[in-house]
Image (cartoon, rainbow, N blue to C red; front, side, top):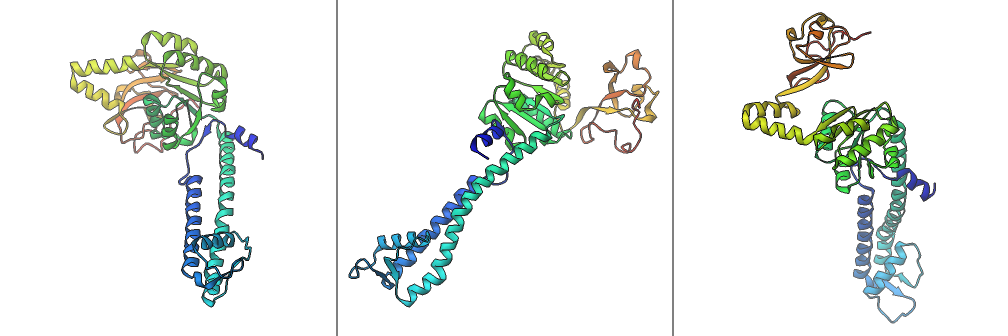
Amino acid sequence: MDDTTVQKVLRGVSLPARARSPWWELGRRLLLALAILAGTVMLVWFDRGGYYDNNDPTRKVDLIDAIYYTTVTLSTTGYGDITPWSDSARLVNAFIITPARIGFLVLLIGTTLEVLAAQGREMFRVTRWRKKMQQHVVVIGYGTKGRSAASALVQNGTDPESIVVVDPLPLAREEANSDGLAVIAGDATRREVLRRAGVADASQIIITTDHDANTMMATLTVRQLNPDAYIVAAVREQVNVPLVRQSGADAVVTSSEAVGRLLGLSSMSPKLGEVMEDLMTYGTGLEVAERDLLVKEVGKQPQSLPDQVIAVVRDEKVYRYFDPVVTQLARGDRLIVVRPAKEQPWAPRPGTHDEETADED
């Protein structure tokens, strides 16, 4: 396979690094080769009286001769102009320099093969990854918001291998790779970049760019490539929410408004702000979660359930728990609840995991 084909397969794709980089292995092997070379030079130099220079019999073997003899011997060239004649020099050549020669050649050949094999393995990983990318999640932008969104997905059970990050910044891509995520390098407003991320086959797309104009453009392009995906976008200004929705986003979060509201609540009531921050922080205290309705809960009022129900999802619409439409829970409903963070957000309460859920089927 030629270099052009390899570059075409690998272009713009960066998968999480292995435990050891091929270049680390390359450097280690080069150091070992240099150590063998230096050690052999010292052996020849210390026993230089046992070597004979055929070009000048009257001249003694010096350090330069030792270096020359070592390099041509370890490379198996062996010109024969400098030869060992004493018993000690011949024994050293037989039992030390010959194994060193074999090790030296193995290192050189192994290094070349390692580089080629590493490139081949990486190309195979990318090809296999592309084939597996179905119904995955694409996170556009790996800043604070994108990183938090990806972390929330992983903490709630999403396989990191099913998340693809798109970002043009090298530092952001390195952080995504270190978090175990695949990365596509490039501008998410360009169709080619989004195609490499498999947007057309994705089930969800999270858009968190630095500018609302880029968010609108990325949302519009994503929606054209994938009419069925669920798109969540973050904007800085509330005034841009309608524009992003018109571009194709299913849900829009206003980051500045949300932060401002939290700041205002915290100033008026520090305890209320503490609870709100608790709800937005994963892993401790309280958690907002969505779960299925259980069979034994059908026909009951939302307020009577063990979970603190705050909303009911029915026919793709969200109703507050006090809405007359959801006075009695029905099959197919899903519940938005507040519960202890130690419980799995997307599963029924502990002790009810094996009970039948009341879906529409």
